[in-house]
Length: 438
Ligand code: GLU
Image (cartoon, rainbow, N blue to C red):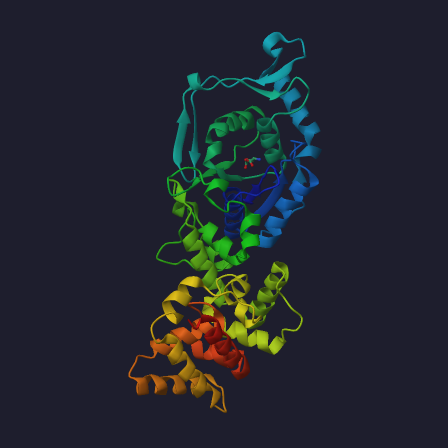
């Protein structure tokens, strides 16, 4: 069997993570089976499906590497086939015309449900069925002559020879109608796999109100596409064992419906952030540097005077602390400007403490005497002074950190001092001593 799956978004200007996860599962399944993954843009709502809204979908797919195997089908161009199918249904007695509400505005075409109980096998949810009494006939062509979603969706799936329909479980109710349409049109009924909803901590459908919900939001926030892809793939599917961080190819190799859960999947942004950190740490150095620089440019804080070599050393020093490219400017702006803000809490706790400024003054003199301002040298000088004073190293480490960076936490102090350099460290310590002396 030639497996053919498709992603069939209705462009609205945003791509919700629930939708793109459906695209990911379609992609993974098609790749697992050596089949084809197709894209159909359901752009029949001309008001919402603007060219920009379509571009948003295409951009999201490109960013996530969801490549499709045939040119996209635009539903707005297939209307004639939908209407022809409706005519066939009329002729065969599967549909009838009706003047709904007797408004005299013309007749719509209504599909006649078979009148029997219906059942289908879902690859994820198992056997699903519905009683005849609960299924009503439904409109397939409006009185203004436009096809309704159900008809367009099914007819396009027939024309695209789709074998597996993988979509959100909010479509289950539609599926009974769709199965009846496939049968009435004499087409093979595809296999269905309905995916569990993505929910928030309260078990309600995850929405914009809960935080970032659209692919663009995550891109904007600086998440890596690989991390978002990996995380969303695991939101409802597990390859077994405790495997989590996997390449797309590995996931495709392992993807099967029997490991997709049928109950709702809870979105956990902390886990996604963790995963993003894992991917950030595995980035090649040049990519990390380029990404950090691009983020700073976008944040408007890049400065051409920043030497490439200096920037590379800053990135190296920050190392695992970078979870997002934007962290560089957000957490370590002091590397690039002497005008860094002082965190009030850190100042209170570390500099306004009894004896802290005196210790800092002594440490400044030790630093000033160093000819070689390496991490090893500053560390040795600091530890020696701490020993002489009979205090822990912390009594010196914290004040100097706050003085030179304005912050209570950060990368390894001694590496930070080395990157900043002796002159700047002394200047900053002096400025802090002057500023915070009571
Ligand atoms: N345009 C529909 C949606 O986005 C398609 C559903 C389907 O995959 O069949 O919900």
